[in-house]
Image (spheres, rainbow, N blue to C red):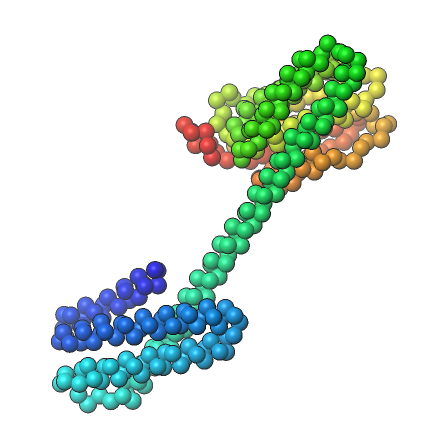
Length: 335
């Protein structure tokens, strides 16, 4: 479409000059000769699709030049017969007309080839970008599908001991677990959720651990994100770090589990800092699927828009996550 619009604009001035200053027979010739041009263009594009895209470059250019020479011969023959009674045209011969126009005809052929080449390259680029995006989204969906089983596995392990001891804490913990699983099943279907909804998930998980550990837990959770914040975040992208804090802290001996969590928002920059104690004399387990999962999700969903720092020193783990969130569209809560 762009090609034909450009061609129409290119031909507009010659048509204007013909209508204004020349006999109408010249206008008729110009209109009829466009049929030859359109045919040559579409024959060229067919050759391009069959030969050039099949990497038969020599065959394509040879066939293309033959097509456009035939176009010029046909148009010249038509011109000689259609304008033979026009006095200003008498004396013209086939050779002169052919020689005067052969350069323009070859330029037309090369220009059409270039248009097809760049159009094909652009379309291939778009398809490749779309394919990569679909591949990344499929990977993200697969990673998200691993979250609920991983979360359930870890939590049920925590509750197993309480069930064996027939602890009175178990009913309350099961209710908290039910709320968290409901969120992981339904809210993770969305690509992004409100930031405060994700913070609520953290609070529910922390409350579950607080009920379980009671006096063995020393916890500080500081959240300064405004209640009306409209920013959104990938679902369950934060809870893994809090889970790991409790997992590592449970390895401590003869002292309470000590965890501090801070979350805040500075413009569009979200920051979460999690710090927990651990027993540096005890063998630490290798990074689990949860941490590997969340790192990959961060790479896919926040490329060059996140920074994750994990520091291990003096009997403490410190995790600092920074995410550059997109500015919200106020009134819709969407990005």
